[in-house]
Amino acid sequence: MNKAELISAMAEESGLTKADSKRALDAFISTVTKTLGKGEKVSLVGFGSFSVAQRNARRGINPATKEPIQIPAKKVARFKPGSELANAVE
Image (cartoon, rainbow, N blue to C red):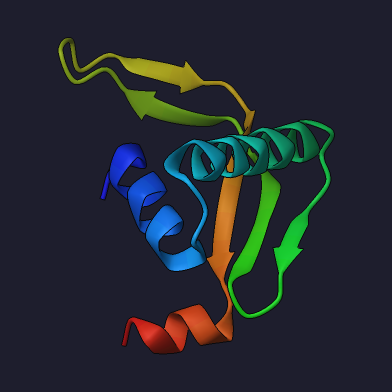
C-alpha cells in the first residue's frame, strides 16, 4: 500500500474526505518526525512505539573494492509493534 492508497483507505474508514485524510496523515508524519528528532518516543497503545536508537560505529567492507571501511555511528528510527498489531498479522 502506498501513501495515496493509505489516504483513500483512511477516508473510507473514517468518513472524512480524501483531502482531510491527507492532512491528518501529513500531520501525523510531521509530528512523529519532529518528536523523534528531539530524541523522544511516540507510543500508541496496541499499535506500537516509535523511538530513536544509537547505532555504534563499526567496520565494514566496500563491496566494490573489498577494502575495509569505517562506518560511523548514527541515530536511527525504530518501530516496535504493539501486541494488538503483532497478533493481527500472525
